[in-house]
Figure 1 (cartoon, rainbow, N blue to C red):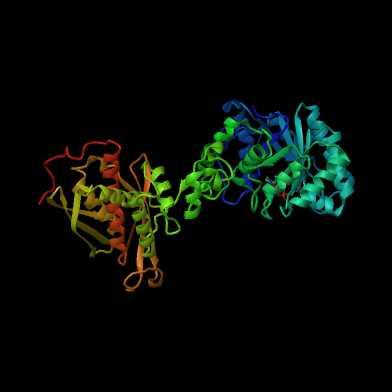
Figure 2: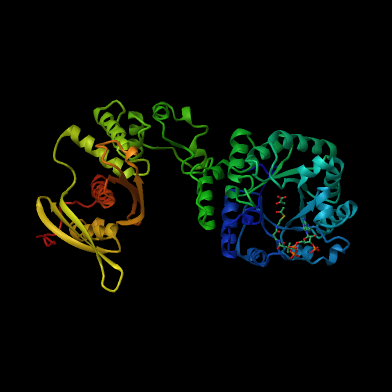
Length: 549
Ligand SMILES: CC(=O)SCCNC(=O)CCNC(=O)[C@H](O)C(C)(C)COP(=O)(O)OP(=O)(O)OC[C@H]1O[C@@H](n2cnc3c(N)ncnc32)[C@H](O)[C@@H]1OP(=O)(O)O
Ligand SMILES: CC(=O)C(=O)O
């Protein structure tokens, strides 16, 4: 059970949507709110009703379309206008009309902002804060006050900034949230200002940090250490300019490093899943290097790390990835050695030892191939084929792949009316029986892929679902490729899918089409061999009618 005294407040749906490129429909916002609730935040700020029509609609629909189990919805808005009656201020009325149990209002705490942006007096600003908070509290709302530009305002006029906090707290605000709105703060100062404000006012304090100095998470933790117990942030740190404090990172740090159970340990174990689900809805992929939840957060490349991790995973990991629902991965590359190969092989389900001959040979081959332009990091399938060759070589016997390639060709014709036509043909032997097939496509790789499918699918039905989902080519200058010194080479990385899984292969050749062909072949071989390994359909039970010569 999460510690209810500590308030975890999410503003993905308000400040998060202020990020460039972030556009959410009401449908998206409802779905994100469900994930945030499951993740375990106490408050979900849904937007600014009355100012943003989509947000007004969000609150209208949220009232009957989402059932929250952990969180309360908060409507965000501003204090009443200067010189106006709070009860008739349309924005304040819109906040009430949103029907949320919580309302958060942004209040100016920086004198220059009061005078230049609000164009009112310091005294009237205090009156606006007091009357707006009292009005909302009287209407039965839990009220938070976001003290905008607090840290910069405090630097200019400490007494006025403190007065804003006192006025808001005295009027009934449950917490006054000190905002590093311009995001330039550093942890030592943020901590000192929070400490002084708490001592001087006695108010319950929150923290809302932007990441313009790259310190939003550190600043948030410094504020918590100084006594703030209401923390604002956003999923993945989405937000205006450089973003906000990343609530996933903050939450894991609070729980695992500070021992504050702001969500339950069960919810923490779902965090990587929640993070991925929210990223799918926003359309912004999770950064591989994102702390805790990134695909690379527990991924190890250096060989020396791998050799220690074999003995004890804790030696190169700050926490157990399972605690946050993530997993350890190993990359094989020329920066690795036998231990990297062992760990990767084990990840793929092979029971091998770093000290064995096949593993040593695989490690040596990878170093050599990477010197020639290969890259196995994102080509697990090509790595697995290489490993299997070494394991097979150690026990002897025929090669595992049930077909051989005799030759292939590709031709591109210019059509008379414009446009091009690409045709490919392949000549193979399946269990010694020769056959050939042709394919036409929108380019050489597509045409070769079709020719391969035409030739092999009747024999191996499991290939029918195989499709290329990503294709990347990089031309490597001659100086980057060891070998005969003949010049540049192309490295092709292809991602394949069979509708259930994805995997990558790599091909290198001085000719781009030949490099692509190698990557395509690896994909086909991989599907056939992994089917055999996992007890898939027996390859030998195949049709006799084929496209044989
Ligand atoms: C720090 C933050 O991130 S706070 C959240 C910011 N979020 C947003 O701005 C998103 C939603 N905003 C909007 O939809 C629009 O900007 C609105 C509806 C709020 C205002 O739009 P408009 O009325 O067209 O005015 P405009 O865009 O020129 O904004 C200036 C008005 O806001 C007032 N204003 C500026 N800052 C604040 C503030 N912090 N609190 C209250 N009022 C403010 C100005 O005094 C001015 O009011 P006036 O029209 O009475 O003179
Ligand atoms: C309120 C808010 O988003 C800020 O001050 O940054």
